[in-house]
Length: 128
Figure (cartoon, rainbow, N blue to C red):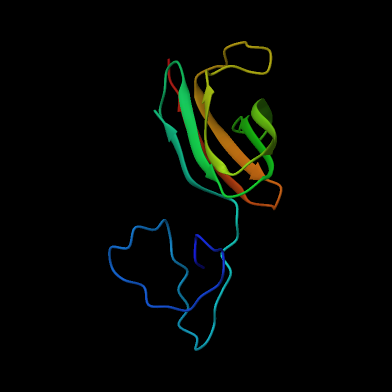
């Protein structure tokens, strides 16, 4: 898919192209659609002591939720929620819950969910 026009196209892929990803099919005449959502997700530093920054790119205007979950999958804190335009976002987690109380050291997870069903999640380690 052409990232500028968002139109599917069949073309040759060259080594070293400055793109995030390419979807390749070896079936003749098949052109697949790349789902829109989030990409370029990072969480740094990880492990962390005081704060960690979650960074991601949202492809287009859509609903978005960024949450912190404990090891059992229970929500600890919502960092972002709402309808957001496409762009690059950063949100900081200070190792606290919804009430601002510091949580215990351990393994947690961030979850980024969009209105089109895309979910990205990974673990975060809080050390003291």
